[in-house]
Image 1 (cartoon, rainbow, N blue to C red):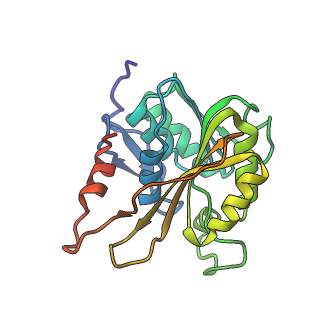
Image 2 (image 1 turned 90 degrees about the horizontal axis):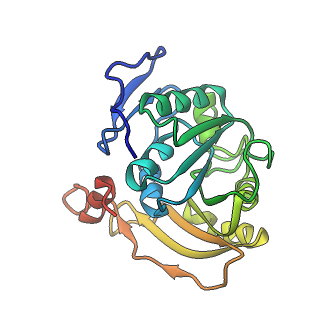
Length: 254
């Protein structure tokens, strides 16, 4: 697919900046006072393994980073991001326009708990989600509303995310999510409760001697039972630099 390079000088709102994704010439507008993407988004984009013929839905797209990363890595035919926070939806829309991806990607401002309204049902081959990890009432106080919503289950619970994914997927479609390992039992129960069968899982640890703090999981709508466990990925080596595996992830190589 042909695409022009991003504008060199986009119109920025106060507090915003532009970062280079170092992938297919893509750049991203972010606002640290709202929320900036992290390693978990990059890991999820790598784990998702979208196909060119896929229609992809991102639940809670935030600044739209997964839309950009998935297009840069895989060039799927359609990308839709749903975001409930108006400020983040605005940034995501501008990131799509800034990178000249309007022909393949769009952002919907809305509540993905409203199946059929925020997104069409049973249309997508792949649904991705990087939802809040922390249950409401747990963790630190809300020093910043946007950060708090991004990290805590204010707008949607784990069950809400999984139910939305099931509603959006075609039979045989895939759901890929990044979350925290301590909620694995809940995740599997929630997925099976809406006929998404867990099929593939990967743990990520900061270093080889540290416990995993990131979980990547894939399920298939109406899939058969049977789980494949991928090797655990260590982010940093003994020297403090990225491991070869993590360098591959950031390099965008499939």
